[in-house]
Figure 1: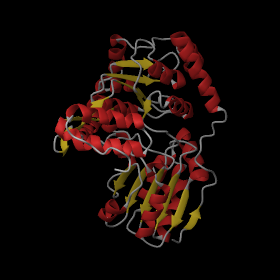
Figure 2: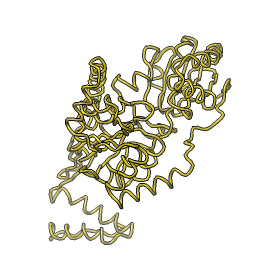
Figure 3: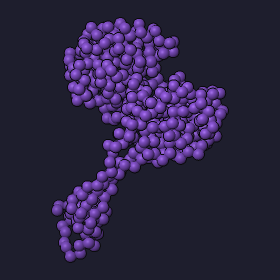
Figure 4: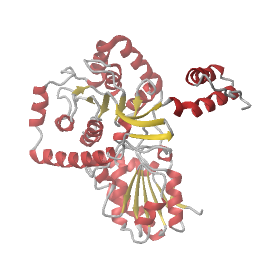
Length: 435
């Protein structure tokens, strides 16, 4: 496959975290040992906030009163879409039972986690959509307790729109804690919370590292890295729309890669010219993030045909994959590695990020090769069960005894032997590994 790079990334999309892992591990250990007092010390240091950690009903209602009605309507619109999509996903999970062999029955049950911890970033941006995506799916899944956690701003607390969103979506408890201390509070069951079975939601490198360290003791949605986006375009694409779609994702931060692969070199060249010009029109904070990401992380490439576009996409395994090319149905059938797929000019990644319905917590750093994004499935355990009649278990016991002896596991074999001896005392069985 011939790929011609018109722009190559100057840096890799890795967190410039330095000693993040060691620092986060030390904080987690101190909070686990010191409990709420230690968590509050870190809250005072990093959040610079001394208000209530667990929001009261009055505080939640007061925050909701600060949210303009039009924004409430938009939040409710997005919530309705996200909830409906999550409910449709849940409907695909069914308890089932099958008779494996005559008299031997096995089944599957979908059991939601008892307690979920949902983290919502709240630093530079108020990520209302993250509260909607995480709490709604946990609620639809049927989690017994849902904690929503977001960093407070000094002297003002959690952004009112985040509080309103978390409450609307069904959070049982809302915590005003940021960073590692927030993750630790949910994982260790501080401030009256049950210990979380699963931790979900995006965050900075400290939040991501805390989840990584705790994984195993608790479940997590995924190991998160910087967000990324790939656009596949042909000669039918509009270069102005492609340029803005790339910029829209680049503004996430300096280390957020955006990529364009096109079969049409004039389109790619036009986008290369348009993006810097359009970035200069953004507000200062957004302009700096987008300019840094475009300079250091962006790639623009030209490939010979649509099959090459698909191969690039499967190689990059992007978090967001946007097809702006003819015959989107072909791409839907062909593409294999992506977190979420956007087909056609009429949709865009921002729709998925905010209000369209499918979840925006998605695999990054190439993880789309082996996993999907957050969904009701992440909060649910698919467990199995089995039962049998004595006659039905007879051939299972014989096979189990012989396979176990072949493997050298005599104790396993005898759990089968004793049942055959008890249930069929008048029969003789050849249960040696040789059969």
